[in-house]
Amino acid sequence: MNTAVIFYIVSVVMAGLTIAIAAIGAATAQGKAASAAFEAMARQPEIQSSISGSLILSLALIESLAIYALAISLVLLFANPFSPIIQKLLTGI
Image: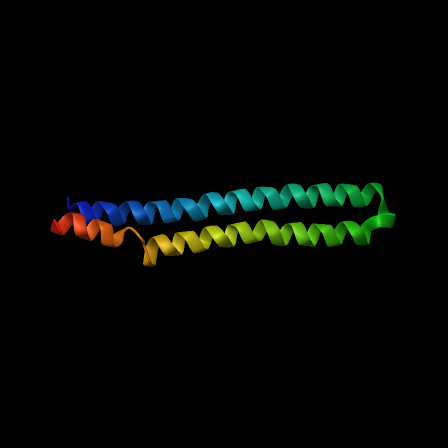
């Protein structure tokens, strides 16, 4: 099998793993954050607005990490920075 083909296969697999792990991590973190916020709201209903504001901010920050992972996987798929290096190695320049 050609070295370039192996390189691109590995890039596709790693892009898929990147987004899968990020989605699992973000979903787990969002579930734990929401659970803790609802538990705190149940214990102290008078500060519900403060807790819900903090919850929304933390969920947005957690989701941004998953979006960063999506951006990295798209770079691996469509604008791989190592492609020119592999092409030079294959052509022997």
